[in-house]
Image 1 (tube, rainbow, N blue to C red):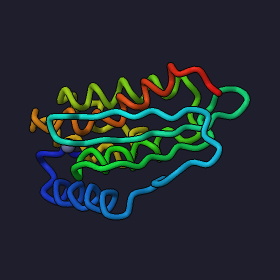
Image 2 (cartoon, rainbow, N blue to C red):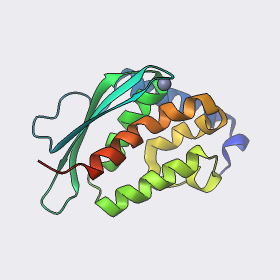
Image 3 (cartoon, rainbow, N blue to C red):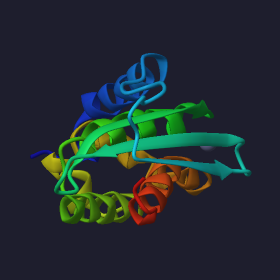
Length: 151
Ligand code: ZN
């Protein structure tokens, strides 16, 4: 597996993945049968995200959806995150959240972890500290949603 810095094409690929998710977000809109709905804001950037989750009977995320407004990093992260956590059990979600947080700290192992899927495209954000809260905002929403009592 080549390191990001050693692969000239990777930065461009990651950039276009971020723009793809920003322009055509996955899991975007209102989730009709949501069990939880949370809103988080990043006042530094003006990002605001509403995250909705629906669980199956054993607590696995059956569906995830988001809406809101914000910069390309926060919305791309939300699109990628909702995709990554759909079908995951609670402990798997905790693991993914920890891996993503590690990636935002610049951890190269986490940045190469296939389980993060498209989220790896955000690894470069670790080098731009001002944007890290944008990338983490959907995960903040996820952590909040996972501790909400389910209706
Ligand atoms: Zn932002």
